[in-house]
Image (tube, rainbow, N blue to C red; front, top):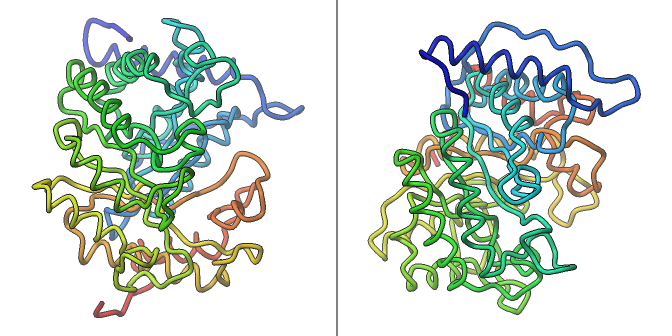
Length: 374
């Protein structure tokens, strides 16, 4: 933690450390990072305060590209960003923390006036069995993970808007190549929640929501069933809300929810389950969106994708008071990705805006109206 005699001194010390870090970060290309000129601190201008985006600079090493990412998120009209802070990156050895990159990301995002939702996950090699995947969180690693999350919360408690614990635990691939286990996920939240509240009592702790799926097999558990089972096991005592991922899957954002279909409004079914267990806490949508890749089964023409995206933001603004943010996946990737994943990007690798980016920017700045009674 930075220490100083007063708040003004602390801010100067923090700025000095960040600016020094910008000169020390390893460049991501042979030519090195571009010169970084910081504009004065700014605030997003947006007609919809729920607009958010997943910025995905976890693996970006060039400070100029990190800064430009957050600049373009703000310029698009986003008020929120979601960023991933992997445990292996920040605690590569037990009790040895490497905060520099997260310091930089949080500093630059806040300079653009963005609210930061920090997703916590993955497991360092020292905390998992040999050859186990990085998503394998065994019972022996639950309390070390909780200790790490608490250290993160203590450092950034006044700088971030919420913490998300884990990601899509109803999937085999996200649960360490093991069948989904609602009881183990509740045990994880039971360990993390009090550890965070001890050091950051006002910081919202969100459970990482289940992936949208109709499947019930050793590889995936139906998202509605998973939610019911964790409530049956008492998860409500260890959360301040949920981080949900209601992807559109090619369907219009206003399509009514149906347990047999995957669509944007499926989150309303999740909400109904929460309320059935007496839980009226918020749902933060930390991933959602539509895809424009022709290689994806649910791919849409870019103009249709852009239209669905702004209609989704507007639907949430008009109809979901319990949802503070809708963060689309994803603004930009730090490297060339699989074509289907690329289909979710708002910006190309070289930061060129796609139609969805420009459409959202026009919407948030009042240049495009959404005429719908839905």
